[in-house]
Length: 262
Image 1 (cartoon, rainbow, N blue to C red):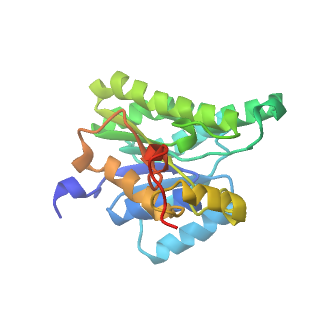
Image 2: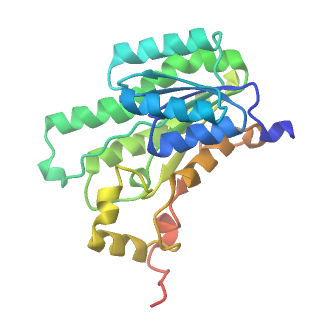
């Protein structure tokens, strides 16, 4: 295989990798030959996924980590450093939580909950991974953001601000760490068929409204996000950094011009 399209010999850490989009990202990266460490808050999901990946012949290990906890993040990076001999090629910051409420209904706990889990964890893990990514001489960070960090939504302002900040972090790190051979990009999905999004997709009124504004007329699949993440980590994407790329069926560029056929 052309080396531009291979992750053979490369290492990766994927947070929240035992289900949903994270699970699909692990499979995509592993399919390109990467060795991967996964962390997730659910021990059950980690064990189930590791068993599944072992049967497929993927090189994946895993551990339990609540990324909202600073000590647990530090322990995670110690594990990764020891496992990969102090080098890391890929960091995928995938963890995200959402309490979608009107802005006026948010309270202090909601703010700290979103900031610590969505934003602080991604920021701190990026800091901790910097020496490992630099040592690999070919480092890539991918933040799993949201279209809520790109365009306005009807509710969920705190969730959206964490995702917008994540997009800005990707831009800043792309410039600050380019000299260290590290690229940083952000992937912003729309509604994807995952456990977090399913309640909204099961709501007939919400689904109809969403699909009527989405040119492709449907929700996305986890593998459709994972394929972009994998591409951004490949040598083939070596000149792409600091970008926020939406995986959204066209909803963020629709405006008022697209009219679905009756």
